[in-house]
Structures are given as structure tokens and as C-alpha cells.
Length: 191
Picture 1 (cartoon, one colour):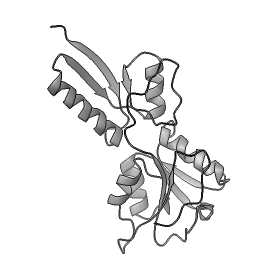
Picture 2 (tube, helix red, strand yellow):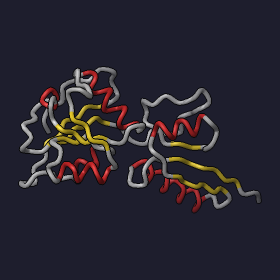
Picture 3 (spheres, one colour):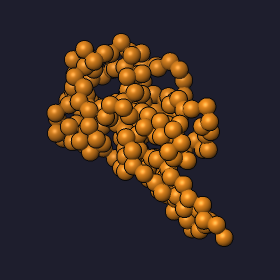
Picture 4 (cartoon, helix red, strand yellow):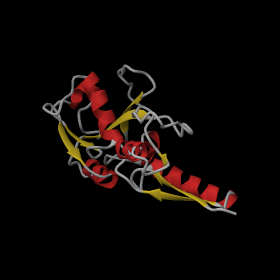
């Protein structure tokens, strides 16, 4: 019996995409022991798409709105992406336009999430000149918000993480959600 092997890229180790790719590897190993998948940590969707286009990997997790090469094929839609901006209760942010002049924690540059934020920001005429953006890892950006170093956070993994993240002294959370399935962003209601 020949053993087949392949590489998969899945973003940061703490991401939902990495966890899903790792779960896929385990299920394949259990049910198809002749197929070996190695999951690699990367910078995210943009990096994954590039590695896939270059033929360096055979499987990659990529945001649904991320362009991939002509040879790329979607295997599965893993979960819906939503745009969310989590704000501190004491931030004075009640709508997206209130972000002007505020400090916001963002995922690293060259990540799909970073690009997604600027897609949303552009719709609301927010620019690097009227926001004070701080980039970092998921853990770093969470701490910036929790410690009050920023008033807002554009989180990595969408809805699931926001449920787990309590951000102000009262344990109250405010977030703005927007499904990415449509082309135009709309003002999101307070959750």
C-alpha cells in the first residue's frame, strides 16, 4: 500500500482555521492511514493562497473573499465570516463612524483579516490617517483591548471569539457585526 502525503496551511496556530485543519488531519489519519497530512502555521489567508498558487502546499485554508490562483478549487465552506468590531463599554463608540480618532487593535499586516478590516473601513471612509491602528497577534490585540490600551478590536475569528471575550470592568460587551456575504457593508446594529 502506497502512502500519500501532503501539506496544508492554516494560519496562526490559535486560529479557527488551524484548529479545523488539524481536526481534518486527525480524521483523515484515523480513517485513511495511508494518507498523511502535515499542517503548517502561516501568517494567514494571503500567505496560504500564495503558497497554494506556488504549488508549495496541496491544501490551504483561505477566507472566502480571498483571490486564489486559477488552479485553486474550493473543497468546503468551513464557516461564515462576519465583520465584527468589539468596543469597550467606556469607549464612547456607538456606531462605526465613532471610530474616527480612536485606537483600534488589528490583526497583522499581510493577513486576510487585516485586509478585510480595511475593506470595511473603506466603505465607511475610515483611513489610516483618521484611525490609530495597532497590529498584533490575536493574544496581543486581545490584551490591548482588555487593558484599555485601545478602545476597539477587530478580532481574528469572528463570532465565536467575541462570545468568549469580556472587555470591560462590568463584564459587558458591545460588538458590531456585518456578514461578509454581501458586497456592500451596512450599519450593524448593537448586539
